[in-house]
Image (cartoon, rainbow, N blue to C red; front, top):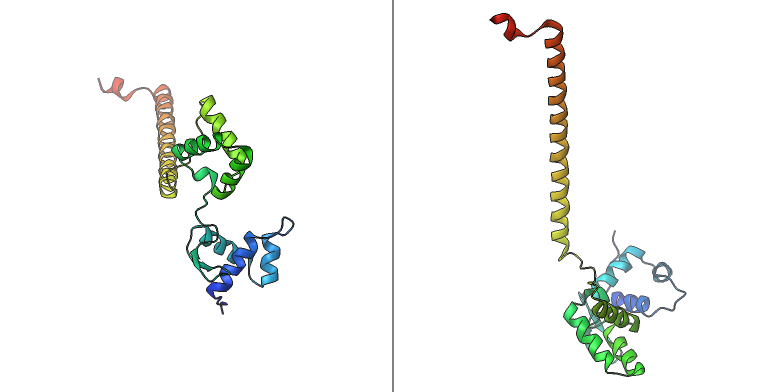
Length: 178
């Protein structure tokens, strides 16, 4: 029988994981709550994709545990450039504050600045998972087809060599018919 957890319990568990101290692992938090680590990981993923609502201390409802934050690798080049420009005009403390609000660190901004100045294009991930899956499937099918054709070519070459040996030993059938 599967245990059912209330929405508020899920939200509190995710907030506990996201607000944990540096020495505490997700596994330890899961054990103290009496739930599986994989279950807790799924809730964290759902909260980041804003799949369920959370209730703050004041009673106001907001979606997700992290608000509008997104990972640094999810930023488009235009957004990165805009952020580099915004942080370039600010002092160090103001830039740190802006980065914290956006879910970034100042080293991300520095890295993006170096990419733009140096002309290095950042690695662009595939558009989406389905495209990647499709390309992997197509690659696998092409490799399979190539392997099949290699085997057919090897078989044909072997038959030609055997035909030459037979003709060398017993002579050509074409010569005897004339």
